[in-house]
Length: 348
Image (spheres, rainbow, N blue to C red):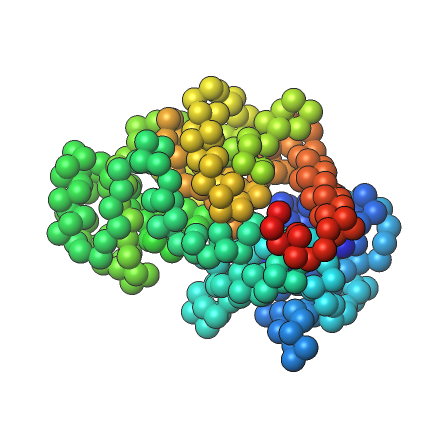
């Protein structure tokens, strides 16, 4: 299998990232893996998608650190590859990380991935689905019963009214963003500071206001979904719990949250089943559900991370489940190519 992975920037990748773990697992199983940044893609005059990509010498890599040091170092293999010749292209860049002078990069992977898909490459997650999810309004397209009460506005009066309707307890955050950045818990005693909080968030555009879920005091659970189903490997769910640090309501690891083992209940599986049809319809191969109590706080479709954290607690390598699935997809695609012509495949 020839696997390509699009990341924000090769030089900012880290050894603990899920993307790195997936690459190492694929390479150690004998697959060819090429990594490319958002600025490395090109559409050539012959209508092919190409990229300045990096790979590593073929061998077994004993650690993620050794692999990444090689990829980012002088011994990396650097070529201008034809993306259309890949079997699979994984879009693992996060638009929320591309701001300021790199705002051009927010949808670059989506746009080039869409063309590569037309040329027969298996592109995951589906770029047409990802284009709907560039900001958090995508979450509002899922059934109301799985979401907290929400408003999206730039009007301070509307935010204050929403806070009053929920007893003064609401969460405010920017429409764009990830990793817990710019998230505020507003309590009844904070009303005097509400104008300042809103003014700060308005600099980034629209504001999301959500009802505060008391269950958030226990943190949240990240549950991975793959191919529309809760990811399960060797009988274990790919999931972990994130706990708050002190009075900080954010459980994101980047915001200082701690990790613990997750217990997946029937309620969690019910939430997964409710959102399954839309995830499948939108071609979302690998996503992360962030669950608080009996509600979803977010659905992460861009570069969901944490498979290594799930492995730490469940003692199984969930990366193998992902690579297994990719291998099957390539096998099925090759079967159809051998047995059907292009016109027939278009009707399948």
